[in-house]
Amino acid sequence: MLDKLFKLNERGTSVKTEILAGITTFITMAYILFLAPNILSLAGMDKDAVLIATALGGGLVTIAMGLFVNYPIALAPGVGLLAFYSFTVVLGMGVSWQTALGAVFISGLVFLVLTLTSIRQMIVVGIPASMKVAITVGIGLFISIIGLKLSGLMAISISLSPNTLGQVIQTHGNLVPPASEALLTLGNLHSGETLLALFSLIFTALLMARKIQGSLLIGVLVTTIVSYVTGLSTMPENFTVLAVPDFSKAAFLQLDIPSAIHMGLITIIFSFTFVELFDSMGTLIGTATEAKIADPKSGKFPGLGKAMTVDAIGVSAGALLGTSTITAFVESAAGVGAGGRTGLTAVTTGVLFLICLFLAPLVSLVPNAATSPVLIIVGALMLGAIRNIDFDSIANGISAGLIAYPLLKIIAGRAKEVNWIMYVLAVLVIIRYVFF
Image (tube, rainbow, N blue to C red; front, side, top):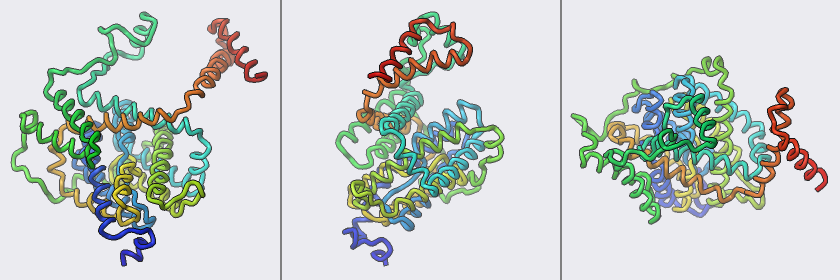
Protein backbone atom coordinates (compact mmCIF):
# COMPACT_ATOMS: atom_id res chain seq x y z
CA MET A 1 0.00 0.00 0.00
CA LEU A 2 2.78 2.43 0.97
CA ASP A 3 4.75 1.57 -2.16
CA LYS A 4 1.74 2.30 -4.34
CA LEU A 5 0.93 5.53 -2.51
CA PHE A 6 4.45 6.97 -2.34
CA LYS A 7 6.16 5.18 -5.30
CA LEU A 8 8.92 3.87 -3.04
CA ASN A 9 10.42 1.36 -5.47
CA GLU A 10 10.24 3.80 -8.36
CA ARG A 11 12.31 6.32 -6.39
CA GLY A 12 14.71 3.70 -5.05
CA THR A 13 13.87 3.90 -1.38
CA SER A 14 12.20 1.89 1.40
CA VAL A 15 9.79 2.41 4.28
CA LYS A 16 12.61 2.20 6.83
CA THR A 17 14.74 4.77 5.00
CA GLU A 18 11.82 7.16 4.59
CA ILE A 19 10.81 6.99 8.26
CA LEU A 20 14.39 7.55 9.42
CA ALA A 21 14.65 10.47 6.99
CA GLY A 22 11.44 11.94 8.39
CA ILE A 23 12.79 11.67 11.94
CA THR A 24 16.01 13.37 10.79
CA THR A 25 14.08 16.27 9.27
CA PHE A 26 12.02 16.64 12.43
CA ILE A 27 15.10 16.69 14.68
CA THR A 28 16.72 19.43 12.59
CA MET A 29 13.65 21.71 12.64
CA ALA A 30 12.01 20.87 15.98
CA TYR A 31 13.60 23.99 17.44
CA ILE A 32 10.75 25.96 15.86
CA LEU A 33 8.41 24.45 18.49
CA PHE A 34 10.39 26.32 21.15
CA LEU A 35 11.28 29.40 19.11
CA ALA A 36 7.82 30.29 17.76
CA PRO A 37 6.10 30.52 21.18
CA ASN A 38 8.93 32.65 22.58
CA ILE A 39 8.92 35.06 19.61
CA LEU A 40 5.15 35.41 19.19
CA SER A 41 4.59 35.75 22.93
CA LEU A 42 6.48 39.04 22.67
CA ALA A 43 3.65 40.18 20.41
CA GLY A 44 1.14 39.42 23.18
CA MET A 45 0.13 35.92 22.10
CA ASP A 46 -0.26 33.04 24.55
CA LYS A 47 2.66 30.58 24.41
CA ASP A 48 0.42 27.52 24.65
CA ALA A 49 -1.76 28.86 21.84
CA VAL A 50 1.26 29.39 19.61
CA LEU A 51 2.60 25.90 20.35
CA ILE A 52 -0.75 24.38 19.41
CA ALA A 53 -0.85 26.37 16.17
CA THR A 54 2.77 25.58 15.34
CA ALA A 55 2.53 21.83 16.01
CA LEU A 56 -0.92 21.47 14.45
CA GLY A 57 -0.25 23.73 11.46
CA GLY A 58 3.21 22.37 10.78
CA GLY A 59 2.00 18.80 11.19
CA LEU A 60 -1.10 19.01 8.99
CA VAL A 61 0.44 21.04 6.17
CA THR A 62 3.54 18.82 6.13
CA ILE A 63 1.36 15.69 5.97
CA ALA A 64 -0.58 17.31 3.11
CA MET A 65 2.70 17.92 1.27
CA GLY A 66 3.55 14.25 1.69
CA LEU A 67 0.17 12.77 0.76
CA PHE A 68 -0.92 15.05 -2.09
CA VAL A 69 2.43 16.01 -3.62
CA ASN A 70 4.71 13.13 -2.59
CA TYR A 71 7.57 15.52 -1.79
CA PRO A 72 9.90 14.96 1.22
CA ILE A 73 9.43 18.57 2.31
CA ALA A 74 8.33 19.75 5.77
CA LEU A 75 6.67 23.06 6.57
CA ALA A 76 6.30 25.19 9.70
CA PRO A 77 6.20 28.89 10.68
CA GLY A 78 9.17 30.61 9.00
CA VAL A 79 11.80 32.11 11.31
CA GLY A 80 12.23 35.37 9.40
CA LEU A 81 8.51 35.95 9.13
CA LEU A 82 8.03 35.21 12.82
CA ALA A 83 10.45 38.02 13.63
CA PHE A 84 8.88 40.35 11.07
CA TYR A 85 5.41 39.60 12.44
CA SER A 86 6.31 40.32 16.08
CA PHE A 87 8.89 43.08 15.89
CA THR A 88 7.98 45.03 12.77
CA VAL A 89 4.21 44.63 12.49
CA VAL A 90 2.94 44.22 16.07
CA LEU A 91 5.58 45.92 18.21
CA GLY A 92 6.90 48.35 15.58
CA MET A 93 3.63 49.51 14.02
CA GLY A 94 1.35 49.00 17.01
CA VAL A 95 -0.91 46.58 15.14
CA SER A 96 -2.77 44.02 17.26
CA TRP A 97 -1.72 40.42 16.79
CA GLN A 98 -5.24 39.57 15.64
CA THR A 99 -5.01 42.16 12.86
CA ALA A 100 -1.52 40.93 11.96
CA LEU A 101 -2.93 37.40 11.60
CA GLY A 102 -5.56 38.87 9.28
CA ALA A 103 -2.79 40.34 7.13
CA VAL A 104 -1.04 36.94 7.05
CA PHE A 105 -4.29 35.27 5.96
CA ILE A 106 -4.82 37.78 3.13
CA SER A 107 -1.19 37.38 2.02
CA GLY A 108 -1.86 33.64 1.79
CA LEU A 109 -4.81 34.22 -0.52
CA VAL A 110 -2.73 36.56 -2.68
CA PHE A 111 0.01 33.96 -2.69
CA LEU A 112 -2.46 31.26 -3.76
CA VAL A 113 -3.80 33.38 -6.64
CA LEU A 114 -0.26 34.13 -7.81
CA THR A 115 0.49 30.40 -7.71
CA LEU A 116 -2.62 29.19 -9.52
CA THR A 117 -2.22 31.80 -12.27
CA SER A 118 1.51 30.97 -12.70
CA ILE A 119 2.33 34.64 -12.00
CA ARG A 120 4.40 33.42 -9.05
CA GLN A 121 6.69 31.48 -11.33
CA MET A 122 6.97 34.41 -13.75
CA ILE A 123 7.95 36.78 -10.93
CA VAL A 124 10.59 34.41 -9.59
CA VAL A 125 12.09 34.01 -13.07
CA GLY A 126 11.90 37.73 -13.84
CA ILE A 127 13.56 39.08 -10.69
CA PRO A 128 17.38 39.24 -11.00
CA ALA A 129 19.21 36.53 -9.05
CA SER A 130 21.28 39.10 -7.15
CA MET A 131 18.12 40.80 -5.89
CA LYS A 132 16.64 37.50 -4.70
CA VAL A 133 19.84 36.72 -2.85
CA ALA A 134 19.90 40.24 -1.38
CA ILE A 135 16.41 39.67 0.05
CA THR A 136 17.63 36.54 1.82
CA VAL A 137 20.69 38.37 3.15
CA GLY A 138 18.58 41.28 4.38
CA ILE A 139 16.21 38.97 6.25
CA GLY A 140 19.20 37.13 7.72
CA LEU A 141 20.67 40.37 9.03
CA PHE A 142 17.31 41.33 10.53
CA ILE A 143 16.94 37.95 12.26
CA SER A 144 20.48 38.10 13.65
CA ILE A 145 19.95 41.57 15.11
CA ILE A 146 16.73 40.42 16.79
CA GLY A 147 18.57 37.40 18.21
CA LEU A 148 21.40 39.54 19.53
CA LYS A 149 18.92 41.88 21.20
CA LEU A 150 16.84 39.10 22.80
CA SER A 151 19.95 37.32 24.03
CA GLY A 152 21.21 40.48 25.72
CA LEU A 153 24.48 40.29 23.80
CA MET A 154 23.63 43.56 22.12
CA ALA A 155 21.76 46.55 23.52
CA ILE A 156 19.67 48.71 21.20
CA SER A 157 18.86 52.22 22.32
CA ILE A 158 15.15 52.97 21.92
CA SER A 159 15.30 56.31 23.72
CA LEU A 160 16.15 58.25 20.55
CA SER A 161 13.13 59.50 18.64
CA PRO A 162 13.45 59.99 14.84
CA ASN A 163 13.90 63.75 15.41
CA THR A 164 16.58 63.20 18.07
CA LEU A 165 18.30 60.68 15.83
CA GLY A 166 18.31 63.20 13.01
CA GLN A 167 19.86 65.79 15.31
CA VAL A 168 22.56 63.33 16.39
CA ILE A 169 23.45 62.55 12.77
CA GLN A 170 23.40 66.22 11.79
CA THR A 171 25.56 67.20 14.77
CA HIS A 172 28.21 64.55 14.30
CA GLY A 173 28.13 64.49 10.51
CA ASN A 174 27.81 60.73 10.11
CA LEU A 175 25.83 57.66 11.09
CA VAL A 176 28.12 56.77 13.99
CA PRO A 177 27.10 58.82 17.05
CA PRO A 178 29.43 58.99 20.08
CA ALA A 179 29.39 56.22 22.68
CA SER A 180 27.10 58.21 24.97
CA GLU A 181 24.45 58.26 22.24
CA ALA A 182 25.20 54.96 20.55
CA LEU A 183 22.30 53.10 19.00
CA LEU A 184 23.98 49.67 19.24
CA THR A 185 26.15 48.77 22.20
CA LEU A 186 27.56 45.64 23.80
CA GLY A 187 25.13 43.98 26.20
CA ASN A 188 25.59 43.44 29.90
CA LEU A 189 28.07 40.56 30.17
CA HIS A 190 27.66 40.58 33.95
CA SER A 191 24.10 39.28 33.51
CA GLY A 192 23.60 35.55 34.07
CA GLU A 193 21.00 35.35 31.30
CA THR A 194 23.35 37.03 28.82
CA LEU A 195 26.20 34.68 29.71
CA LEU A 196 23.81 31.73 29.34
CA ALA A 197 22.85 32.92 25.85
CA LEU A 198 26.54 33.30 24.99
CA PHE A 199 27.15 29.72 26.17
CA SER A 200 24.21 28.54 24.04
CA LEU A 201 25.54 30.37 20.98
CA ILE A 202 29.06 28.92 21.30
CA PHE A 203 27.88 25.42 22.23
CA THR A 204 25.41 25.23 19.34
CA ALA A 205 27.95 26.62 16.87
CA LEU A 206 30.43 23.93 17.95
CA LEU A 207 27.80 21.23 17.40
CA MET A 208 27.13 22.59 13.92
CA ALA A 209 30.85 22.71 13.17
CA ARG A 210 30.94 19.00 14.01
CA LYS A 211 27.98 18.51 11.63
CA ILE A 212 25.83 16.93 14.33
CA GLN A 213 22.21 16.43 13.25
CA GLY A 214 19.75 18.50 15.25
CA SER A 215 22.41 20.90 16.55
CA LEU A 216 19.90 23.71 17.07
CA LEU A 217 17.49 21.47 18.98
CA ILE A 218 20.29 20.00 21.13
CA GLY A 219 21.54 23.51 21.85
CA VAL A 220 18.09 24.62 23.04
CA LEU A 221 17.60 21.58 25.27
CA VAL A 222 21.09 21.65 26.83
CA THR A 223 20.89 25.40 27.49
CA THR A 224 17.50 24.94 29.14
CA ILE A 225 18.94 22.27 31.44
CA VAL A 226 21.92 24.52 32.30
CA SER A 227 19.51 27.36 33.06
CA TYR A 228 17.73 25.31 35.73
CA VAL A 229 20.87 23.67 37.12
CA THR A 230 22.49 27.09 37.68
CA GLY A 231 19.36 28.55 39.23
CA LEU A 232 18.76 31.11 36.48
CA SER A 233 15.36 29.49 35.97
CA THR A 234 13.13 27.78 38.51
CA MET A 235 10.99 24.74 37.97
CA PRO A 236 7.24 25.36 38.35
CA GLU A 237 5.28 23.37 40.92
CA ASN A 238 3.48 20.19 39.90
CA PHE A 239 5.44 20.02 36.64
CA THR A 240 4.71 17.23 34.16
CA VAL A 241 6.51 16.63 30.88
CA LEU A 242 3.39 15.62 28.96
CA ALA A 243 -0.13 16.99 29.09
CA VAL A 244 -3.28 16.78 27.02
CA PRO A 245 -3.36 19.93 24.85
CA ASP A 246 -5.72 22.58 26.18
CA PHE A 247 -7.50 23.70 23.04
CA SER A 248 -9.44 26.28 25.03
CA LYS A 249 -6.22 28.36 24.96
CA ALA A 250 -5.87 28.01 21.19
CA ALA A 251 -6.08 31.08 18.95
CA PHE A 252 -8.21 29.33 16.33
CA LEU A 253 -10.06 31.79 14.03
CA GLN A 254 -9.02 34.78 16.15
CA LEU A 255 -7.59 36.62 13.16
CA ASP A 256 -9.14 40.02 12.34
CA ILE A 257 -9.42 40.30 8.56
CA PRO A 258 -11.71 43.40 8.46
CA SER A 259 -9.24 45.39 10.58
CA ALA A 260 -6.36 44.36 8.32
CA ILE A 261 -8.31 45.66 5.32
CA HIS A 262 -9.60 48.77 7.12
CA MET A 263 -6.13 49.78 8.32
CA GLY A 264 -4.79 49.51 4.80
CA LEU A 265 -1.96 47.13 5.63
CA ILE A 266 -1.08 46.78 1.95
CA THR A 267 2.64 47.18 2.58
CA ILE A 268 2.58 44.54 5.33
CA ILE A 269 0.58 42.10 3.18
CA PHE A 270 2.97 42.73 0.30
CA SER A 271 5.96 42.10 2.56
CA PHE A 272 4.59 38.79 3.85
CA THR A 273 3.78 37.70 0.29
CA PHE A 274 7.06 38.87 -1.25
CA VAL A 275 9.32 37.20 1.30
CA GLU A 276 7.35 33.96 1.18
CA LEU A 277 7.46 34.08 -2.62
CA PHE A 278 11.22 33.66 -2.88
CA ASP A 279 11.85 31.82 0.36
CA SER A 280 9.58 28.88 -0.40
CA MET A 281 10.34 28.71 -4.11
CA GLY A 282 14.04 28.24 -3.52
CA THR A 283 13.43 25.58 -0.85
CA LEU A 284 10.93 23.65 -2.97
CA ILE A 285 13.11 23.58 -6.08
CA GLY A 286 16.36 22.98 -4.19
CA THR A 287 15.01 20.12 -2.09
CA ALA A 288 13.17 18.49 -5.00
CA THR A 289 16.36 18.64 -7.06
CA GLU A 290 18.46 17.16 -4.27
CA ALA A 291 15.92 14.35 -3.89
CA LYS A 292 16.27 13.72 -7.64
CA ILE A 293 12.56 14.37 -8.15
CA ALA A 294 13.19 17.46 -10.27
CA ASP A 295 15.81 18.22 -12.91
CA PRO A 296 16.45 21.95 -13.43
CA LYS A 297 18.64 21.31 -16.49
CA SER A 298 15.82 19.64 -18.37
CA GLY A 299 13.16 21.85 -16.85
CA LYS A 300 11.25 18.87 -15.43
CA PHE A 301 9.56 19.59 -12.10
CA PRO A 302 6.85 16.94 -11.62
CA GLY A 303 4.45 17.97 -8.88
CA LEU A 304 6.00 21.42 -8.38
CA GLY A 305 2.68 23.14 -9.10
CA LYS A 306 0.93 21.03 -6.44
CA ALA A 307 3.77 21.67 -3.99
CA MET A 308 3.49 25.43 -4.46
CA THR A 309 -0.29 25.22 -4.00
CA VAL A 310 0.02 23.34 -0.70
CA ASP A 311 2.69 25.83 0.36
CA ALA A 312 0.38 28.76 -0.43
CA ILE A 313 -2.62 27.21 1.35
CA GLY A 314 -0.38 26.63 4.37
CA VAL A 315 0.10 30.39 4.79
CA SER A 316 -3.60 31.08 5.27
CA ALA A 317 -4.11 27.86 7.23
CA GLY A 318 -1.48 28.96 9.72
CA ALA A 319 -3.24 32.28 10.23
CA LEU A 320 -6.55 30.48 10.86
CA LEU A 321 -4.85 28.30 13.47
CA GLY A 322 -3.11 31.26 15.11
CA THR A 323 0.48 31.47 13.89
CA SER A 324 2.58 33.42 11.43
CA THR A 325 3.37 32.36 7.86
CA ILE A 326 3.87 28.61 7.42
CA THR A 327 6.46 27.90 4.76
CA ALA A 328 8.71 25.16 3.42
CA PHE A 329 11.75 24.59 5.64
CA VAL A 330 15.22 24.34 4.16
CA GLU A 331 15.99 21.83 6.95
CA SER A 332 14.06 19.35 4.79
CA ALA A 333 17.36 18.88 2.98
CA ALA A 334 18.62 17.03 6.07
CA GLY A 335 15.99 14.36 5.56
CA VAL A 336 16.80 14.15 1.86
CA GLY A 337 20.45 13.75 2.80
CA ALA A 338 19.41 10.82 5.00
CA GLY A 339 17.80 9.12 2.01
CA GLY A 340 14.30 10.64 1.95
CA ARG A 341 12.85 10.61 -1.56
CA THR A 342 9.08 10.53 -1.12
CA GLY A 343 6.16 12.02 0.75
CA LEU A 344 6.48 9.32 3.41
CA THR A 345 9.38 11.35 4.81
CA ALA A 346 7.12 14.38 5.11
CA VAL A 347 4.26 12.37 6.63
CA THR A 348 6.63 11.00 9.28
CA THR A 349 7.80 14.52 10.14
CA GLY A 350 4.23 15.78 10.23
CA VAL A 351 3.10 13.04 12.61
CA LEU A 352 5.96 13.87 14.97
CA PHE A 353 4.84 17.51 14.95
CA LEU A 354 1.32 16.44 15.92
CA ILE A 355 2.68 14.32 18.77
CA CYS A 356 4.38 17.45 20.11
CA LEU A 357 0.94 18.89 20.89
CA PHE A 358 1.35 17.07 24.19
CA LEU A 359 4.64 18.83 25.06
CA ALA A 360 3.23 22.21 26.13
CA PRO A 361 4.61 21.95 29.72
CA LEU A 362 8.10 21.19 28.39
CA VAL A 363 8.02 24.10 25.94
CA SER A 364 7.00 26.49 28.71
CA LEU A 365 10.30 25.76 30.50
CA VAL A 366 12.51 27.02 27.67
CA PRO A 367 13.97 30.50 28.40
CA ASN A 368 14.72 33.18 25.80
CA ALA A 369 18.42 32.62 26.40
CA ALA A 370 18.02 29.16 24.87
CA THR A 371 16.14 30.23 21.74
CA SER A 372 17.58 33.65 20.90
CA PRO A 373 20.94 32.16 19.78
CA VAL A 374 18.95 30.14 17.22
CA LEU A 375 17.92 33.43 15.60
CA ILE A 376 21.54 34.58 15.52
CA ILE A 377 22.74 31.34 13.91
CA VAL A 378 19.90 31.03 11.38
CA GLY A 379 20.37 34.68 10.43
CA ALA A 380 24.12 34.19 10.05
CA LEU A 381 23.53 31.18 7.79
CA MET A 382 21.24 33.30 5.60
CA LEU A 383 23.91 36.02 5.48
CA GLY A 384 26.21 33.46 3.87
CA ALA A 385 24.25 33.90 0.64
CA ILE A 386 25.93 37.29 0.23
CA ARG A 387 28.77 35.55 -1.61
CA ASN A 388 26.33 34.95 -4.50
CA ILE A 389 25.54 38.62 -5.03
CA ASP A 390 27.11 40.14 -8.13
CA PHE A 391 28.67 43.22 -6.59
CA ASP A 392 29.59 44.53 -10.03
CA SER A 393 25.95 45.69 -10.24
CA ILE A 394 26.52 48.06 -7.31
CA ALA A 395 28.11 50.57 -9.70
CA ASN A 396 24.90 50.56 -11.73
CA GLY A 397 22.85 51.11 -8.58
CA ILE A 398 24.96 54.09 -7.55
CA SER A 399 24.72 55.52 -11.06
CA ALA A 400 20.95 55.18 -11.01
CA GLY A 401 20.87 57.00 -7.68
CA LEU A 402 22.96 59.88 -9.06
CA ILE A 403 20.36 60.37 -11.77
CA ALA A 404 17.23 59.73 -9.70
CA TYR A 405 18.10 62.04 -6.80
CA PRO A 406 18.32 65.34 -8.70
CA LEU A 407 15.46 64.29 -10.98
CA LEU A 408 13.11 63.71 -8.04
CA LYS A 409 14.16 67.03 -6.50
CA ILE A 410 13.31 68.83 -9.75
CA ILE A 411 9.92 67.10 -9.95
CA ALA A 412 9.23 68.07 -6.33
CA GLY A 413 10.05 71.71 -7.11
CA ARG A 414 13.10 71.65 -4.84
CA ALA A 415 15.86 71.83 -7.45
CA LYS A 416 17.74 74.53 -5.53
CA GLU A 417 18.37 72.08 -2.68
CA VAL A 418 20.66 70.02 -4.91
CA ASN A 419 24.35 70.91 -5.08
CA TRP A 420 25.41 71.81 -8.63
CA ILE A 421 27.96 69.01 -8.69
CA MET A 422 25.11 66.48 -8.49
CA TYR A 423 23.69 67.81 -11.78
CA VAL A 424 27.12 67.52 -13.38
CA LEU A 425 27.47 63.94 -12.18
CA ALA A 426 23.97 63.06 -13.39
CA VAL A 427 24.73 64.40 -16.86
CA LEU A 428 28.03 62.52 -16.99
CA VAL A 429 26.32 59.27 -15.99
CA ILE A 430 23.64 59.75 -18.66
CA ILE A 431 26.33 60.44 -21.27
CA ARG A 432 28.18 57.32 -20.14
CA TYR A 433 25.15 55.08 -20.61
CA VAL A 434 23.98 56.66 -23.85
CA PHE A 435 27.32 56.74 -25.69
CA PHE A 436 29.50 54.18 -23.95
